[in-house]
Amino acid sequence: MGIDLDVSTVLAGVLVLAIFLYVVMDGFDLGMAMLFPVMHEDDRDVMVDTVAPVWDGNETWLVLGGGGLLAGFPAAYAILMPALYVPIIAMLLGLVFRGVAFEFRARHEGRKHWWDAGFWFGSSVAALMQGVALGAVLQGVRVRDGAYAGGWFDWLTPFTVLTGISVCAAYILLGACWLILKTEGRLRDEAYAIARPMALVVLGAIAAVSIATPFLHGDYWRRWFTWPTMGVAAVVPVLVAGVAAMLLRMLAARRDRWPFFLSLALFALCFAGLGVSMFPWIVPGALTIHDAAAPEKSQSFFLVGVVMLIPVILVYTAYAYWVFRGKVSAGTGYHG
Image (cartoon, rainbow, N blue to C red; front, side, top):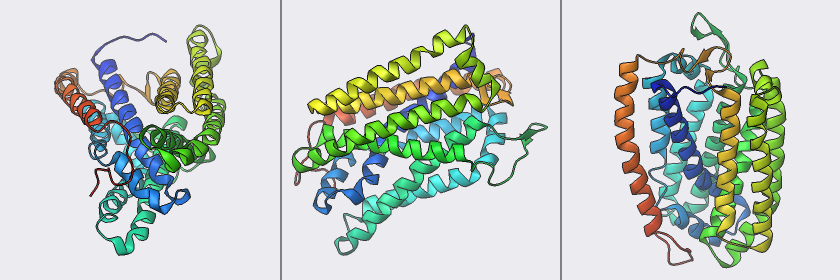
């Protein structure tokens, strides 16, 4: 599995980075929202306060990923979008509904419980559909003459249901670890109680998806179980096991700072595993990143803009997290 660092490969790496940053930065507030039904109603304001200063810009990375796919790899965009219309539209509607509920719950006290339910529902739909879309891309889509040749619901299979549930579980773990990092007292204790069993659920989900994925395509199987790529691929599950052991140990020791960052490391390793399976495919079994690439001048122009923009976004984001660092408790939040 050689990697040539041409413009198409670099741009694909940038898009993967954008999607990863979206997943980790929006994942914990989606997971936090999915915890609403099992948390005390009195604690929900504090939960929202932990993300209120930093959550608004998270969809920037989602826009960059989608826009970058269209600008840099239009052939792949033209195939994947029709294949994923239903889950993507459902995800976007969930994100919109979640955003409305987030704002209205603080301004409509008489019906806050309805907006809390909407916040949970929108977040759950968005998370589930993200996982389903990931599974649909992994399993591949039917392509004929360079166009999508499948039906409206080809994306719905047992494998995509598995990936959808797995992403929801992973987000819930990330949300619980975020609450451990940012809260104290009863809320933090409840987050610990949820994080420990959820970590085991996520590890089981990672194992299930990892076992199922090589059977989707012969190329996946060859990457994981034939030399020389097997030697590289084997590093990923070893690191996953090590990070998982550290995560469980830190949860047991109640070390507030570590679980969240170890959960992020698990996400990063899962992305690495996906990269091992898929590279250089962008539409598995149909198009590689070079097959789907826009003209080199178009990609270079887009890449220059992205290289100028991403550091600005990262600096702003890092500054926001730095300003609003530390624990959040009742009456000291930032959401009015």
